[in-house]
Length: 80
Image 1: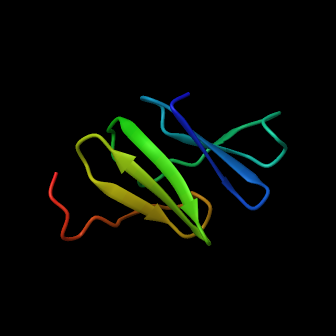
Image 2: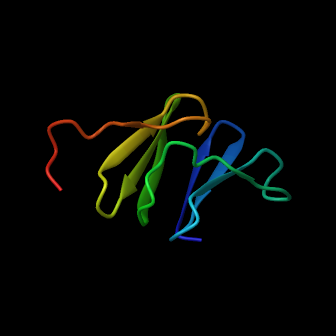
């Protein structure tokens, strides 16, 4: 596991190479919520309001507005 974030009662765990996982039961079970993220090393993960942000090693920043069900690039204007 590389990084953790909480959004309400949801717990998110970012891994080095296997994407992001979500738990709805305090870590007893996990679901992969990486659909739409590039195959890139995850460096950071944070939640803000209803947004979840993932920073990657060489693909920029991505945002999910639906608890990781889908991700879109959110790094417009940022350089690598």
